[in-house]
Image 1 (cartoon, rainbow, N blue to C red):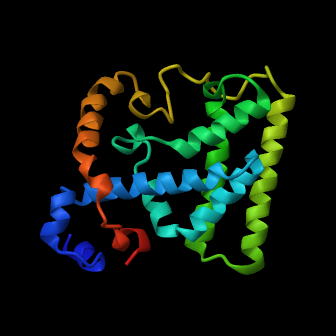
Image 2 (cartoon, rainbow, N blue to C red):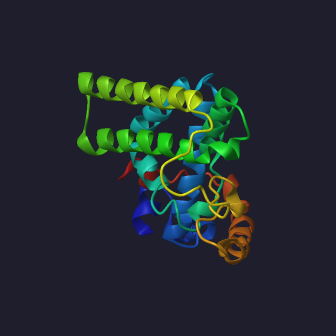
Length: 212
């Protein structure tokens, strides 16, 4: 906490007035990064444009992006808003028809593809022509998957049917195991109330987001 306070040009006591501990800081980073990513994707007009902007954002904010997905399938991250996931799932629904939740499995495959590409470029230090080719090869794959999904409506997926108890991108209602929601709602509710005053904080968490 002392290192974060120093990098943010504030004092450790001031930091503790706003954040309880390291996990609280990481939560604030996740919420801020999700908000900024959603703002970037909201300016796009198609699924392919959204995917390209997603990859660009990941490269432009690589440290914050990596923090965003640490433990994403576990509380508290699982029960936080996922606005970009929902926006892209909505774009799929608009293209393929049906309710957005119907396309969660397909969205998961596209998300895995985009995230894998982003992390390969970030961890691999990819630049120049190779970065350009990796971005566009990912976009081509996304387009091919979406086009194939449009052609194969009604065909069964491999593996088991998507269980009704597996819910992603719906904040407090998200769950990956049966009986999980009840245990998490109270915790999520407490986190929101405890962070209302933090939203107005001028501390930008520079140390965590820049990787210093």
